Length: 219
Image 1 (cartoon, helix red, strand yellow):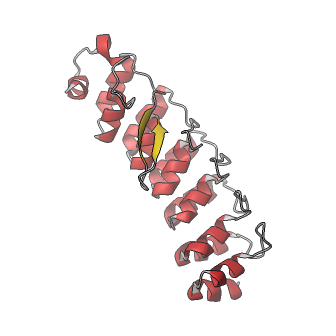
Image 2 (tube, one colour):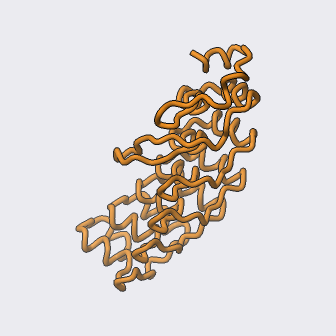
C-alpha cells in the first residue's frame, strides 16, 4: 500500500527510510518487484536506503542477500534498474555469495540489464565466491545475448574460475551449443586448459555432448 502511495506522489518521508520486514526487505525492494519506477524515485527522495539488503531465494532456492539494484538486475526490471543507478545505487554491491548486479543480470540472461549496468561502469572483472565472472554466469545459462553484450562491453573471454574453467569450458560442460558457437566466433580459445589440463573439447567429450565435440574439433 505504501508503495502505491509513493507512486501516487503522497509524502511518505516519515516512514520510508526505516521501514523494513523481518527478512530485511524494504518498500524499495517491493517497488522493484512490481516495476514501479515512480515509486522508486519517490522512496529515494524520501530517504529510502539504496543499499539495504533483504534475504531471499535465488533461482535454485538458495538464500542470498540482495540490494534493490541486485534484485532489479536479476529480475530484468530495466527501468527500475536505471532509476536506481541514476539515484546512486552501487553497481558493484555484492551479495553474501559475492554476486554483483552484473553477475545476477548475466545469470538471468537479462541482456538489457547487462548493457545498462556495463554502461554505468559495473565491473566486468568482478568475481563471486567461486571466482566466476559475469561472463561465466551468462555462459553457464547459455544466454547468448547476454554473452554478446558482455563481450561487446569488454569482458575477457579467457578469465578462469576456481577450477580453471573459461567461459568456453563452461559452455562445453553444459552442452550449450549456441553459446559454444558464439564464444568461438567472438575469439574464445579452444586450446585453453583448466586446472586438470583439459581443453573445452575434453570437457565436451567427458560429458557426452556430441555436437559440441564436433564444433570444437572443427575449430
